[in-house]
Length: 425
Image 1 (cartoon, rainbow, N blue to C red):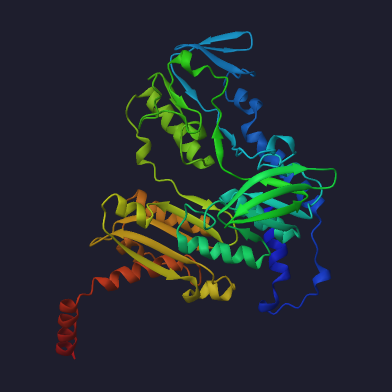
Image 2: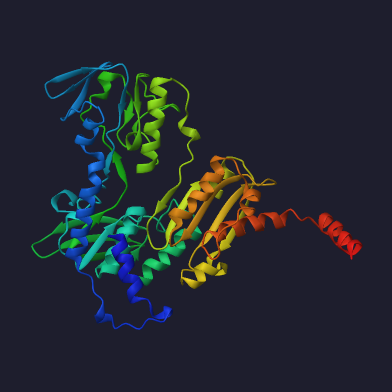
């Protein structure tokens, strides 16, 4: 549905590209958008189906499982004894403790995809990745969207410069942003849902058709009887694991949202690979060695890998930061996608990449080049020597490498170079 929202936005904002189009010539068929999404979801879901795993030789037991002791699991009437086990029960949308929230039919990122009609008015509680993605998407479809955020900015964990670009784009898309806000009460009647919002000493009454809760994720620890297995956990953060992803029962591991603060599908995938290796060959692979990029699929996207600048400083690591804005990258100019940048942090005095943030139309694709560089310990100097096709937005990464190389030309080296040039004339 994000792809559909980007498509209608591109069509309706194509005047700068020389395309004249009457607004009434393009419209969103919300039912068709959602039907396409459900069709594609059904096709993709086969990759994780029980049948596929059975065909791969895996014994699949369907039912609610829980531990009986440190070596035994019960699923329905069946009892399984294990040598090694992994808890991968994932997470679910976190629901804030708002008075009246359990008395209304609210939406989350799990059930919003069951909508068949576009809500005229949508309130989004939470300005994190999911909240921003869906707020922008529904605004572009034509909903009147209000996003309610408890912090002073959206995407509070992201680079401030990056978040500011997304905030400005959301406002251009028609999203109303309410910051430093607390939703103190929700209710509903036959026609609409009512929200009471406290912000900056003011009380706002908001009437909407639907409320989307986008306040993060909660690990699924309930009902597992983890105490019987000797597995310690916290209700809000999940099971406790060490760097090898072992729980407090060394024969039981954790992977994914149940134990990780990085709640991404790709992170869960690689943690699962690590668990398999450590279960067979104990103590070989550490989770802390995983270099995990992530992306927020707003338009433009925000992608990040490694440390933010403030995190490096908190660790006592001095940094140099290099920034390449997209308004000086030819392909971004040609595509009318100049709102963004590539920002790379290196350890001061070296070209060692500590982290990077990219804001671009397809930042999630671009970040992989920097992730690979970090994984292979290639520095900015090496990226400067990588030939990129022209024109591409990825050329911004090479330009960052050029910026670093220019810092190596100290006044002393510059004077030597000038003397050599004069001598060679």
